[in-house]
Amino acid sequence: MPKYTLLFLMEMIAFSSFSQQKLVGTKQYNYDSFGAIEQIDSSSFIYDSNLGALTSNEPVLGFDGELVIWFYTQPMIGCNKEFKYVGSAGIPIDTINYELTSGFVTLKQTSLNPTRELFTYNANNDLIAIEKQVLYSFNTDYVFEKRTEYEYTLNGKRALVRRFFGEPNVQISSDSLFYNSDGQLVRVVTTNYSVSTGQASPYLEFSISYNGNEVNNVKSYLGNTFQFSQLKWDFDYYYTAGKLTLIDGVNITDGNIGVVNFTYDSNDKIVEIEAIQDNALNKVVVFEYDNEGFITREKYSDRSSISNQLVIASDKYFYYEKSSLGNEDQSINQSSIYPNPANNEITVKTDDVIFLLRIYSMTGQLMIEQNTNTVCLESLSNGNYVIEALGRKGSIRSQFLKQ
Image (cartoon, rainbow, N blue to C red; front, side):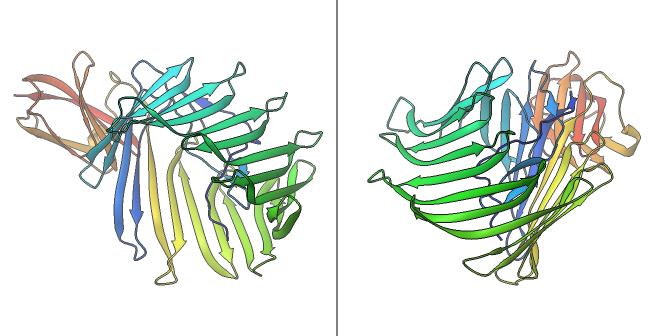
């Protein structure tokens, strides 16, 4: 089966429901081929005065490189600052600062090996360019590294994607998207270009047919020139009660048979995507959601090349803030905050999975933030504070005395 790597994304169903929940953090466990934890990566997000409204996750029809597939993505987020950590101890490794204009991210800048991304929009608020720049140690100015440009049809559908890399701004690939009279995406051509000559090199082409509003069949072709292309994958799509439940097809060139099964919960949310190759289970993605319909977990399993068995490759958790400072304590009877009064450190023990601890002054000023269960208090003067713990089940908070 093709890898689940997103080449480009074309939304076919609009995000529909809104919430004032804030995505406050993520934590991802990465595993090696033996099933042992290889690395832990996490992020926490700061919003300042920005409301940080998120749209509830809805299925999106897009391409993973060779399949047209329903999948879920991380909730859209517009924060002011992101802190990145690594390891079980939550060692800070980077800070990403965001600038927003009219609610849209226009700048994303990192502090480690300084890089920045510039986002440009047209009058319709369509994203038309993302440019990445790098600050090298031998240069005082940011230097262009790569750029992606987008063009749209008159009715706002993405029509062209161009990618450039390095100096002197060499084009390396392009995606051309074509629609029928009903506005349905029916053809995509991905062309790669030689860096040295600028000439077109092997390219991919997707042909999409429909049965009403439902994708019926997708064929992918691999070509060497614009005059020659060879059918590679041929997939059929099947639905149950209007929901995509099965994709199956064959790799014409290699003879592989591929099957993708989709499982839904009672709220029509996808809870599992299962990929099978030549009658052997190859990949599985499992999703979990909270009561608001937001993704809380995304577990990805892959076939190990060593044991030839399915093992967890990554397990990612999403954490949301559902209440603000000043509300009454939540689930405080199920947690333990000690010692109180505290001297050098304070610990939160709870039946929840704690992702982030924050300490506020009594006026609401954020004093400390970290992603471990124990907080060092040496930087605080004596007095009363509020400690807030953010976990999978929500947030808990309590006052304590530093002495």
